[in-house]
Image 1 (cartoon, helix red, strand yellow):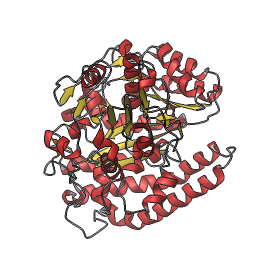
Image 2: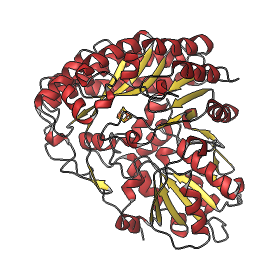
Image 3: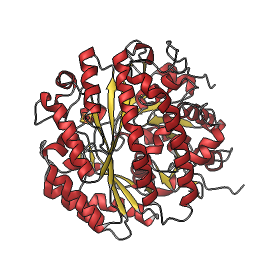
Length: 525
Ligand code: SF4
């Protein structure tokens, strides 16, 4: 085994976070599925193969890990930090003579308790979710016992409890943004200071966020942080809204292009509000951003992570102009994004997420959603939207309003994904407050059935878009065939239950909550 000079700091994540997923970003959600449906070896070689590695370093990595890598490289030097796939950890950081002192671990859902993992586990009941299984597997590696371990990232709150940390052998948990506090924390550890075990990061200004130094999974490039619409249950909703400069964004785009990526995914909670001072988009700044990104040499397509339906509804010309820039200058004829419907009920919008409809009042929410989806469809956008069952204070009328809204989206090219509300207590899952299958009423099953019915009808369209996009790519035939076969099998399995669910009946006889929902934290020491 060739030894690699170990850096002082190694950054990693569990295997589910270190893949480019065979068919793109939507397939990444399959890491929230419970194991037991497919053999693990098949899933991790076909659906979620590891990212390529060079000299032990991951060639592509999660954007958050890349930001932490950049802030630490500024502080300690580039040679002292490496982002490493778990399969290479022993080779890079292990062994008696290794110089590595700290391993930083990032995660989006370490314990598999966020939606949609919690919902998939509860519904399918075949085992614990892949993300939890792989995280525990990572923490059990001997090299993780030898080093100081710092956990951070979006799901750090799940580990911010001294008992959980002791069981999993985690020395420090860093909560929140990394730029200002992480370098101080890592320096303190290396210099042997006594530090609190749980550290809350300070929010940085946009100009304090460094450029990334390596390529990201799916060419994801962050353009803004925060949202500004202020929904009560949402983390980005609580963050201050900040925008990176176009020059900064272009440097991150070029880092990805130089690493061989041809597609770039612009990430913000609402890409159409890039540079906006209030709720109304600054159309010229958005169009300038798209023009400048689309003109980077080597780029073939641009994607968008999220758009807000209210922005689409209030600024349809902006959406059209963005689409025209992409379709006329790049090798693409459609765009996709994620968005949130969350409910069809104006009263739940008024109660929990008034800002979602703004500047219109909550009573307009049904119209905003249906019109916005129409505008997106007219401009060849394919969106995946979430809708939530069991929001606090929900009534039967609220659920019926959601069913009616989904039915009004008939024929629109989009996926509507029903989620169950997840309630958190401290750093864990609050099973009583969480909405589970066992709590579903006939109306909830009708909503579930309406979503699945809608999605099954648009799946062939989605598959043909994927086929067209990849028709000239070498080696894509087998992959496309595999994807179509898996999607058709899944569709056939679901189709059997649609009628039953639309009549308000559960698809199975099981009534109790899945035993896999609440994680059992292993004692690693
Ligand atoms: S609009 Fe979306 S991202 Fe913004 S606060 Fe609401 S749920 Fe969060």
